[in-house]
Length: 401
Picture 1 (cartoon, rainbow, N blue to C red):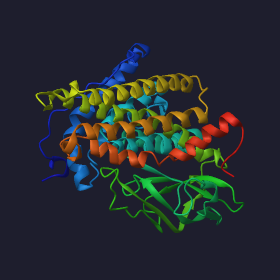
Picture 2 (picture 1 turned 180 degrees about the horizontal axis):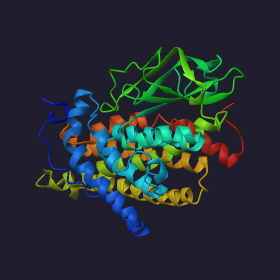
Picture 3 (picture 1 turned 45 degrees about the vertical axis):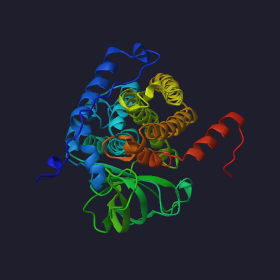
Picture 4 (picture 1 turned 135 degrees about the horizontal axis):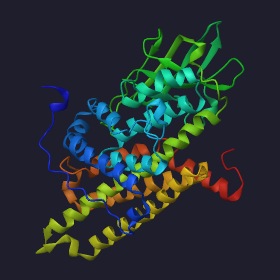
């Protein structure tokens, strides 16, 4: 039986997106078309199989081609390099719909677009752009992003991965951990220190001697996503693979800004799925001779969920406008990422309670979303670090040191 045929029968995906404040009216026709096409793809390709893949802790690799076809890889990259040339609200809506299906699938798309294609486009040479971007856009080539190390997560400046000048090439040594896509990636955009101790980006290709990507197993979260390490043991990398137009932490941090923006929308998608599931279930589940939706405590839960989703939709839409105008600050993006994930987690937990015992089964998506969001609240800047970013922004005082 082929990998993509191995799935259990699944109830039809009946998702209806909540839009309590008519935010759709703030979107252009193109925004809605992009959103609806991704929503249809998720209903058809992701929903029927995702529970089974998550239960088996397998990544549904056959979805990569479809993600490329719907333009989910680097949608804001210009058309001349294979991207879709879309604006940031379109990008956000795409991530919202994909994560509504599963956070792990959205992680795959986010890494490819924000953490691999974006730095090559923003900081790469014209030769690097032409060589890699068109193949990355279709999914013919997949990438990953190497910043986090075993001993350096929230404090990336302490990284020990480094490369030494060796004439026409450099010698790369070190290791990266918690890397989405690493087990199957064709290239890795790796951040490492040069001989002067400056951080630079370098493109490492699979097949280079001394480069390996061990997979991380036994995860309770992002089970339908492939996570691993990047290990560099005297890897010879040609100097033309160094990103020429950036030095310092500004490079990787600007990539993370792109990814965090997508997560702000994505996590809200997971929240919307949990709310929609709980709302539908509460109208059908009869206890004490009436639907549980008629009980006060259940209505309180639903009212609080839709309120937080609506606030998140407005926050994300406004952030998207600012991003399109190139006015969104890193601190604004940080706030949206933290807000969306925090409330998505709360909504997932409340929705799980509303479903009772059914909430922990794979017949419904809630427990999977809840476990996934436990990773999303940590990666691309932890909840606590994002609080301190906002705190520093409003007070002007640095609490990190």
